[in-house]
Amino acid sequence: MFLPGEISRLPQSGGNRRERKDEAVKGREKSDGRAVPEGRRKAVPTGAQKSRGGKATTASQQEVQLDLFIGTADSPKGDVAGMDRGRPRSEPSAVPKPVKQGKGPLPTMTMEAVATWDNLRKAFEHVEANQGAPGPDGQTIEQVREHVWELLPRLQAELLGGEYRPGMIRRVWIPKSGGGHRGLGIPDVVDRWVQQAVYQVLSPYYEPTFHLSSHGFRPERSCHTAITEAVSYVEDGYDWVVDLDLEKFFDQVCQDRLVSRVEQKIVDRKLIQLIRRMLKAKVVLPDGVVIETEAGVPQGGPLSPLLSNIVLDELDWELDRRGHHFVRYADDCNIYVRGGRSGQRVMASITRFIEKRLRLKVNASKSAVARPEDRHFLGFRVRRKAEDGTVEVLLSKRSRDRIDQRLRELTPRNWGRSLRDCIRQLNAYLQGWAGFFQICSEAELETLRILDAHIRRRLRALLLKQWKRKRTRAQRLIQLGVREKTAWKAIYRGRSRLWALSHASAVERGLRNAFFAARGLVSLAQWFSVHNGWNVNVPSGVQLRLSLG
Image (cartoon, rainbow, N blue to C red; front, side):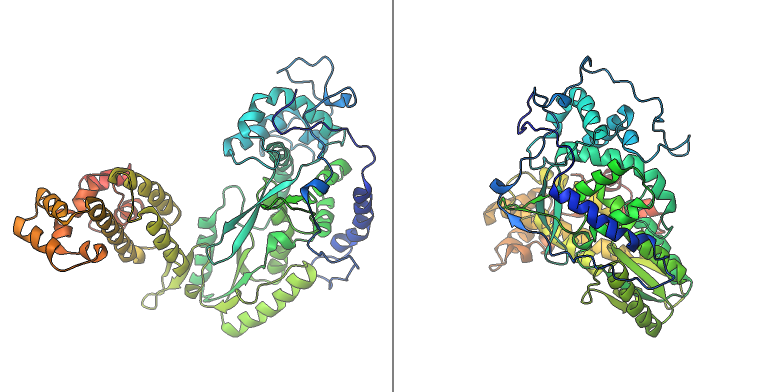
């Protein structure tokens, strides 16, 4: 059976030339992560070849990807004889079934554990729930779901036989808030399925070993827990921060070194080889050019967050060994110290460790030693009040600029639909924004009120634009309760621009706060006051009820 975008393939035995070369390189690199005790001796160069970023070729020059789904007379392993469609095949009795962590023995980190029916089923349910765009093969979640019971036994056979070959990765560029673009890799749906299955087996073993100050992409941890820990360090008197920025971290990870660290816990060669193949998957650029991957971890697959934490876990325990107080979320790391001069010494020594031991690069232009209130960390900044010494969590300047930009995009002056549609779109963004920044302190209440007023003024300008003629604007204001003389005078006075007119007293009186509240507009100040229990006089009425809905 063929699916859209599929091509038949034959199983390859023995591996190709590149895979045999990888095995040889791997033997030389293993000593980098095993022979040198962490934090005891200086790293010794292994002579491994530096990454050059890969070679570019056209799509027509690439080898055809070995396809999972197709079974032909030339490739009988694609089918399982005697298998009823939709019925699970019996699992080997020696392989324990995967269970939830803390409720029984963990599954062994083997390919057999990855390929169990229950693990693959749960992995697909997770991938399906996350949705996501198609990869280079063009297959959607819906297309794979229609044939999932047919694909399960074939996927098991290829994984257990060591014949599974990951497809290419589609590169997508998304803009970064600080400028530039971040490259995301979108694997095929089936590759995301396999990555999730591998993650479910590896994660229960690695998660308990990660440092407590690591908060990125981990269960029961988030940006909020990271900020809470940062606040505790500032409260203890660590009033300076060493803000480390790793330059293009996901693109610069040494793959051989990562595989060497994985080999310290995983002994199954088929599983290790599968991880290596995922790292080596070729990348399809937006213009159709295909490049080989010599370094980095594909950012966008289910397995990449775990692999990135495995890489940086060595940094975490080195900081712990040196007695530093730090918080790390993915590749964002803040080290808290008591003085600026000590911060400079820490910056220099940790930079040497990162660049020589981990083979990563610190972005000197974005890293700094400064006060916490002057640095952007996960959208927040932390400030100690001079009056009583309490610590406040505030919005960073970058976060404030970002919401201003987003509000301009959501309330364009040429909005062509109804006001309720505009408010509905605004509310979806504001409620998500408030949910993320809800840990801000009460000191940000005035900022939230300014944002509320700014949103209402943009909506007033939007309505004035939709009313077009001056006569219509004056009549609408009169209908909204503005005195006739006041309305005509405000509209016909001079040649005021719409933005200036939106701030006129007559317009504000007609399009008052209650007008937007009755149409469901969320008030950020009221939302934060109610959810955080701030001691603020919040007027009762329809606006408060709607904002909580």
